[in-house]
Length: 536
Ligand code: TEU
Ligand code: CA
Image (cartoon, rainbow, N blue to C red; front, side, top):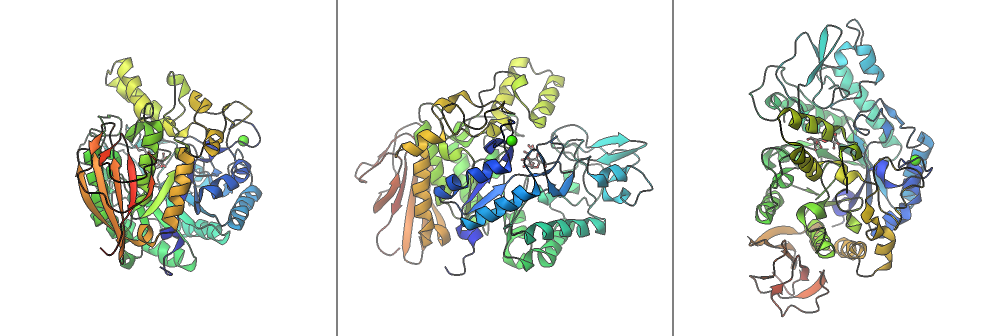
């Protein structure tokens, strides 16, 4: 236990800075806004705050297009504000995790503007070719755009040119950036799309419905080499950690990045559980099937060396709207999902607003959306002759803006006194922080209680994971450490179901305020955490 690091035993709270709290009332969340809410975050019981990018950026992709890695987006504040945030957080025992986006920069980064001149020393910072290949990108369409008489590669939007990791200068630049921030006392990095940064070849790819060409850049040996260097040259000099965002990985590919002897990353965000309600790609949603979902989660629990557990983030629809029921069983299902996320093995990540059960946005037309990806996909579906109602329905279900609506602090919203950059959900009237703080039975107070239980428990932090039942939308698993154990019982559906196993022990927490385990009938979305008695 003593050797357990903060990033293993701690809990991470993700902030999407644009949407968290607007201090100067210009409609955009900012650093002073975050500082003003540090006590709220601390009270929840978390240890680490992951900030989505706050660097200087023209905001084509809300900060995931960086034009200066060593400066702060003026919309969010200044470097002085950032120093203050790091310092004030530290005083409260909170550490800051920053987003590190090193697959691409903004096209407005001075490296890229200079790179446009074929004779510039920055030319090789990016990937230029005379002719495009057949690759298709994450936001759909070709990955190549033309400037002058050459094409440059961009796996995301055309304002996000990919860096050329075959150029040793990039390694040098990135190391400097990492040192700069780590020296300020941050606790590490969430490494954006880290498993696709190294392009082994630029050959044409095997034709595929999505991401043609990915076999040339996904999980390449070159990427492993880069991560080993960043670890030994930078990370190892600090008390810090890395979590990689890794698209399309298998448990084997994840372990190749996180096993301690590999000396690369500490953990990764995998996506397989997020793919269980989609056909082929994330824009074609099918009905959520809990059985499939729990099997994937269980597989990752058993096979991955360590997990970064999450049910939502700034790229995904809201978890309660997606895996729960945001109407009839809002309270119950949000608490059930919390119980899942916080009793699994690994480091739990909570996305801002999930602790009060925020739901998908209540957008009324395409004019309400802001996300570049939503527009790209909408246009693509139009080209494919999808009727308007279907296009709109798919965007409504999948848009990343669902997770990005401003944090609901009060009945009136409370995020800003100005005009919010993205529409505040009208359900802030009932779903808001104020209501949650006041009500002992609220989702927030359930999170808080559950976090406390987790933090005080060797079993929940270090225990092994064993699935006991995964059928009929019921998920039961056991965590064991030395001679102690917990059982988590989850009904992931709205149907009442008899628990197939005998439930024995003491109830640590339950979302129906159960006082005993005599009744084996599980209520809709019921969740029970049971501390088992005696040795196992
Ligand atoms: O996301 C990468 C990613 O592959 C997806 O999760 C992304 O949401 C996109 O929808 C692919 O379909 C990361 C960031 O989290 C995301 O916000 C950025 O847009 C992206 O990288 C580019 O930096
Ligand atoms: Ca502001």
